[in-house]
Image: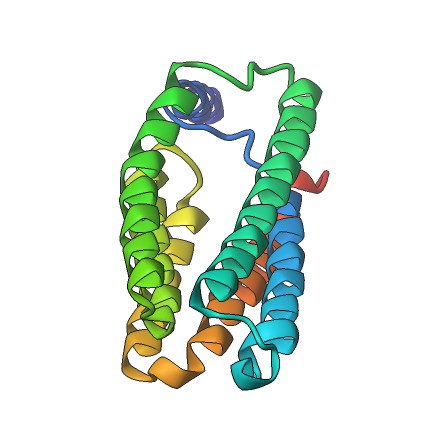
Length: 201
C-alpha cells in the first residue's frame, strides 16, 4: 500500500513539474519588495510630499516618476531572473521552457495593458489614480499567470487587487497602498515561499 502511495506521489510531482513553473524563488520577491520600498521612499520624499516646493512642472514630475518606476521594475526583474536561474540550476531544471513561456504570456497581457492605462493617467495629470491602476492590473496579471506557477502567486494577486481598490477609494493615500502592495506584500509572500519551497527540509 505504501509503495502505491509513493508511486502516486512521484507521478503527481512529475505532472506538476511538467505543467508549472516551479523555479520561481521567494528571494526574488523579497528583493523586489525592498526595491519597491526604496523607490516609493524616493518618490515621496523627493517629489510627492510637497510638489509645490520642487519647482518642477507637470512633465518634469511625470518624467521623474517614470524613471523611478522603470528603475524599480528593471532591478526587480534582474533579481527575479538571477534567483530563479540559480534555483533552476540547483534543481537541474531549464529556466526557459514552454511552461515558463505560457506563464509569461499570461502575465504580460494584463501587465502591459495596465502599464499603458497608467501612462494615460500620468499624461492627463491624474497621478492619484496611478497607484490604484498599477496595483489592480498587476494583481490581475498575477492571478492570470498563477495557474502556471506556485499557489502563493494567486493569493498575492488577490491581495494586490484589494489594495488597488482601496487606493482608488482613498486617492490621496495611494503611495501608501502602493508601498504596501509592491513592497511589504512582496516581502511577506517572498519569505513565505522561500521557507516553504527553497529551504532544505
